[in-house]
Image (cartoon, rainbow, N blue to C red; front, top):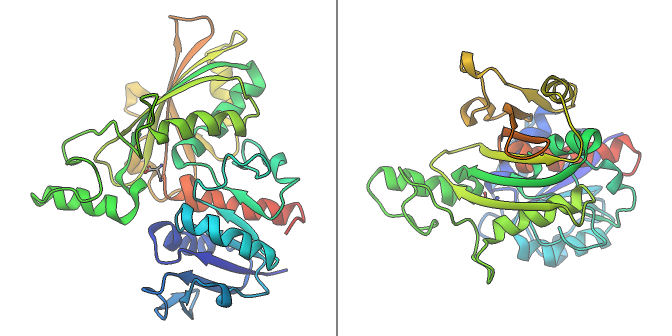
Length: 331
Ligand code: 2RA
């Protein structure tokens, strides 16, 4: 069976990566409908040897025969148009943060909580990139040892802010000021991703905390985060300190990661083997290394996790959700 696929936000960084990954993963596409703002409407995009004209995103242009709609056009567009696409019969997988914490909307990383897809009502939320890449790892630890406390420290690529983020880094390197980031990002580190909240955390940190609890169904999990933007183009790094409920042997932890689908272990520091953004870039896996015991607590573990934030962190995870729906006959 083939499916009619809509991409909403087709000209953005994630939108373009949707198209690349759909092709690479041989997603069974019958028809492809590309939606974007009026500014991009009319552009012709070549995909799989055929030409597609970008359609302006507005009510009267929503096709009646869409099976799955992949959204990455910002929260406002998702809030307004995801229900409209759903009401026309599409299953929407949304990359924005608009629906993630809605109790009736599944928030899914296929390697962590595929069962959450069972009761979807036509809209499914894709988690935040920095959250996604840690979920396969924490799922292994939760199942085997139980999670007691998680501390995230992130090192996030500028591509997380889309084309504007990449442009800022380039501009800075040419001596021009940032227009998207709050300060210069070149040769710098910004502990400021998204907006600051009343409690002194940023929205990015709050997302990681809330999304981790929802995806792992651990509403009372002790989890905290510090999210930092660094001058890397693609690929988020997350330092993860975990306190487990049960004792563990390091080699058992490593073996469990090696056996986990979608996870690659790179854990040989003496030979300079560890996850890095430049080696994770343009792949769909999650890379884990620097795996070592944290003796300051009972059953403590330190990890370093890297993934391409535009692929596994956004476009690929969204497409893997659609693939899972197909596998379960739910599309
Ligand atoms: C960022 N995670 O990195 C946020 C949104 N993609 O900017």
